[in-house]
Amino acid sequence: MWKKKLNPENIFIANGSEAIICALPRLFIGQKGNTVIPSLTFPMFKTCSLLAGLEVKSISITKDLGIDLKAMKKRVDKKTKIVFLCNPNNPTGSILSKNEIIDFLNSLSKDVLLVIDEANFEFGGESVVSEVGKRDNLIVLRTFSKGFGLASLRVGFMVASKELVNKLE
Image (tube, rainbow, N blue to C red):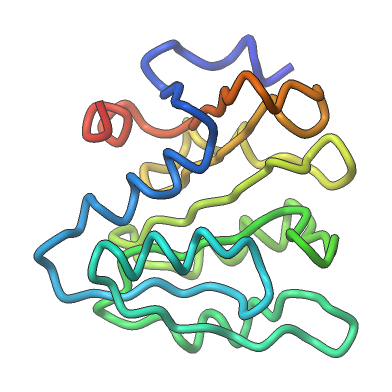
């Protein structure tokens, strides 16, 4: 199981995963950059990116409410700092396969952070958290508020490289 393969130095715990979502774009304050997100997804991605001064590039979802990774890749440019994805997507429930996410990650520059919000993971899909140790630009977010029913506790966590965890600390 992936939990046994992680080191504590790869985990960052916060007051819900929303706190992490808002902290990540702030790593780029003062830099001209952008964030790429699906047009219909968790709204905090856009809100927090804009508050940090990043331009937001939205990609239309497909007719079947899926995420078009090819269209997202086309919007990524030299100024892109972060790409946010929910898997399963919130609010559509569409699911990307682990292979689709890994292929997308492989197509990105190592300077672009790919944030996979797995807040609804317990309701479907495959986690990519096992890939974190192999990639410095992959961040996986999880929470105890959905599948575990502990919303009032506000406990979210990030699994990422030691360097990214240190930056947020």
